Length: 306
Image (cartoon, rainbow, N blue to C red; front, side, top):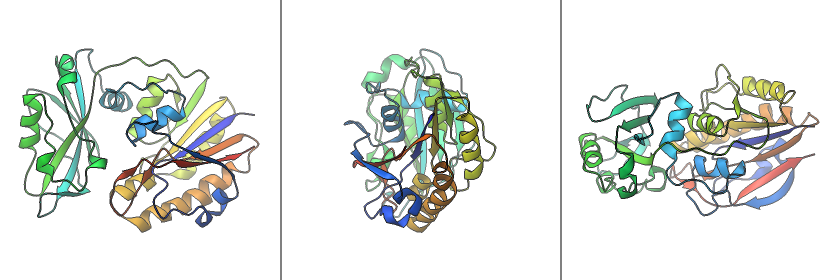
């Protein structure tokens, strides 16, 4: 018997009710766990903690994003995530907006990661990372964008201001440098569509199972992902199945889209997982409130079968 850990990214919210999802409700509630372990309520920290990595390097996010996207970086590169948002008339950011495909600047390399996501690589600035202070956008959505200027490095402040206009801006965060993590202790496979989770798989030397149609959003082919997970569990003692659409819908502040997606996950994913003889664990990395778009650091329910 093998183990499938199903992480439903951003599943819970203040009004989340297990009874709304019959297959989830049929599982045994093992209790509630804080997957942040005192860190930020975001996917990188929480998924690594769920995989047993308790000592997560603080400067890791951008590098793992680069791994997940197949972007080559050098040991002395400084790497940051860039998240693009619309601004309202008061200068506060509201919903994610499409990131530009290109952003010309000789001081850094810019990579479009899809949707509102981008990555910036600054050569030869890795040694400046301890001087930086940035803001995690999912925790600051009520702030004015102009107040979220990264501090400690003039070039980052300049880039931030160049990308700040009346109606949109790019939040710079997740500063990191290349870091080596210890491999996952078991032979393991990962099925996912989200770039950061692909990067986690590569960082922990877990085998990444490619799935056509796995987008990391509500339009993902969840049946294909379940097929891949159930195939992988025939060969691997541990399989991580990560499903991300609920988190993205919540960031768009669309409560009904989030809940409809969770109903599809319950009917199409959990229903199939529960018919197997394998050990099944279902949880969320963190909550995401679809009314504010913010991540929540509350304890998450953990459900199990077998």
